[in-house]
Length: 442
Ligand SMILES: Cc1cc2nc3c(=O)[nH]c(=O)nc-3n(C[C@H](O)[C@H](O)[C@H](O)COP(=O)(O)O)c2cc1C
Ligand code: SF4
Image (cartoon, rainbow, N blue to C red; front, side, top):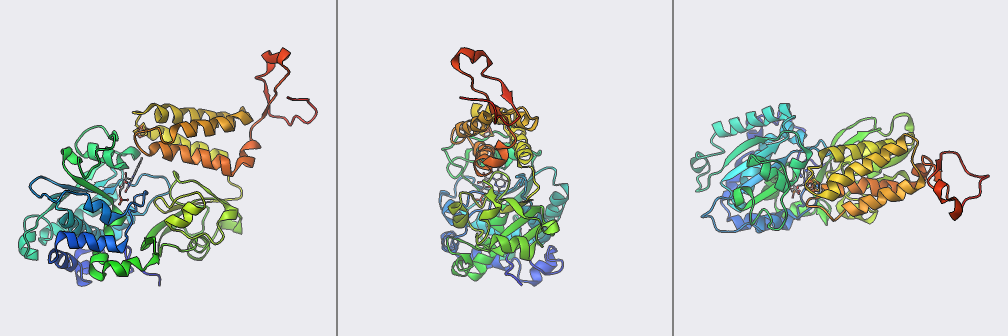
């Protein structure tokens, strides 16, 4: 059985008594016997990288928090999980909520946060209820809040609250998430200042993904070195790979980083229905650059290996598309999502996502020209790097890289522009969808 750190094959592990029978909440007791800096060092040693999409080193992020404990400090656990193709954090809420709570307690102790928020997308009613039940049980046994002092024989206490989002993708972006918790509109903030300097209510704040924090108890229990030796050294540990699309056994698979993409697809997720060929795989949620089917052989699933083929691990949400997939339609659908979710603060994102959608719809309607493909890449380039938050890249990358990597398929869907001699310039905007073999152009 593959190594299980996050999703364990133990019946009823989500129940507090079962979790306790397997050593649960003892790791926090071990943690408070150490100094906060020792916890941070252990996590640095583990080389744990954030699972929210950007792979930022977790221990390093924690070390940015000021050591001064005279002011309020906050910890936010990001469970907004709204990226299409990503559905892993919900598994933790459902099957391993106490490990997430224990990880939250250890993290809060390491950074000195007296208040923690677990931010969950509002539509995830089922998981909000399950998580609230787990929190209530942990409070009832004195593992959270004022009673922690006697339970764990320590000086540290912290509170944990669930904050429900209202169903906006942008509220997963860390600074929009903080605005949302403050009761404001979910607008991303301009950085710097970064959350560790000026976060929730302008106080130092750390934001981490649900999966990231669920790794922490095992790291503290078994040691940073143990964790650093799992999977790929530069991006160690296990990942929760959510596999969807044209796949026989869609689901979430916990596997070490560096597992072959073909093993995930064929060995674990049962291959493609009808044994069809794979045309395209999106490796980490829809905002990540797609990979061609002929690139997947031998490809390892970790941050470095994906970077080498011009993509990224993102949230580990793998979307498989077979040979019959209409990629123009797929791209238009993805673009519609980012257009809808743009918060509208920055012009390139607000306008550019709409322009890209309109051009893609024009192509779908059979009215596009080959110039439209370059126009799309041009718009994407003008969004990328010119916005307040990374939703700009999330919208631009699929457009830019899908067209670049599957140009033939897009070319086949657009007509060629007829460029007539200068005297007839007035006709030069005419387009046709028919092959122009017998017409002199240029
Ligand atoms: C538009 C947008 C949406 C995001 N949504 C999420 C999300 O749902 N969950 C998440 O953990 N991170 C999300 N992120 C990344 C967060 O801003 C942040 O980097 C992350 O929560 C940090 O946690 P980590 O260091 O543990 O990865 C999003 C980023 C952007 C730009
Ligand atoms: S990039 Fe888009 S979502 Fe992000 S702040 Fe700008 S307009 Fe809002």
